[in-house]
Image: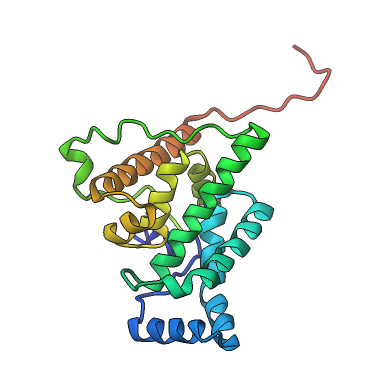
Length: 222
């Protein structure tokens, strides 16, 4: 199945098309402090949000902490949700924002993170703002080894590009939804996706081209 989407390759299934009426009812129940509404919200979004945050941070402990903070923010801010986007998009916007906050905190206090590279996003050619008609680097095979290679390659991509690729190729969100989540314009979103996909392709190609290491027992003949 070479043309399978990335979410199926990685064994992740999104929540499908949002039900606006269902979301509106859930929001009203949350605003009324209905306990079952909180449980339903967590049941629907906890795993997708964790998967998103983990792919952005690549740290299980930090990801769990961030997910807790995401839902705290959702509960605190639900009264201010104006419905200008879907509930999923709003929650993902909070999740990405909190993930970036965590990265900034880590960089400031531990000095182990490199700065996010914005590159030359403000100088876009026409190739940067048209959809990529070619297959994504993830449309390969469905075996476990490939999934591990893709996940590893994603972690080598600059976070600012990784987020766009994850939201597009794993979450299968529209360009408009991604622009809302990342708080940027459509041209920048498309540029980040293209550059992120290319970075993943290069990482996979470099891995395939790397010579296999030959093990020799210690003390062997030189």
